[in-house]
Image (tube, rainbow, N blue to C red; front, side):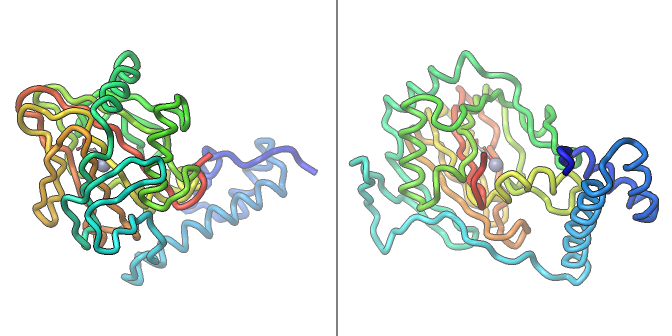
Length: 285
Ligand code: PD2
Ligand code: ZN
């Protein structure tokens, strides 16, 4: 039995060889020659190429990716929800396509202030996941500073994560760590999708950990003086950033039909603080 396991870099390299037109047996031979166990190399080769081909065949047949289950609050016509921790939130807006729900009072003023104080000393210039490599990079479309908490890192973070899970009926384990972002005057986050583009070569390595992102909750930790709305350009919706409010949106397919394109409009005056929770299809460990 081999103790080797295929790495994301190996899978990336396999895709590059396939794109360059090298036949699978030649690629396999090269892997074995560079020290990979034949069984591990063969399995990595088969899995990587079949993932790649199934994505391609969906695209070329003009088909949509299959819809998957997503987080969803159970509103049942109510506009006021009491969560298991006794916290009450109000629904101030909802739409079906894209699926967007705005909650008031999701965080208390104290929780907003405490989260900001915990995050402030750890902020660094924001990076985004680079779809082509699976790594992260500084991105000019995102002129904010940010940091990630580990899941359950502090009692406050854990309480917020439990609240999100209870509100959206989605396991805490499927959530990425909370990210806090700080935008100064003029800073923005240009429109983007939060899901990972499955056609990008880096996607299989990103998706192996927890699958796709299927939902986002952006929590506003302050009220900017002017600007800083979260915008959904496909439907011309602007969600006002109000301290303690949170905007939830989901996307059941990693495809523009989800209409989940969204951005953070430039801050015109003052500053903007948000905390974001991204939710995956499966456990994110
Ligand atoms: O800060 C925002 O309004 C914003 C806009 C778009 C945050 C995100 N995306 C995000 O964190 O994904
Ligand atoms: Zn986003």
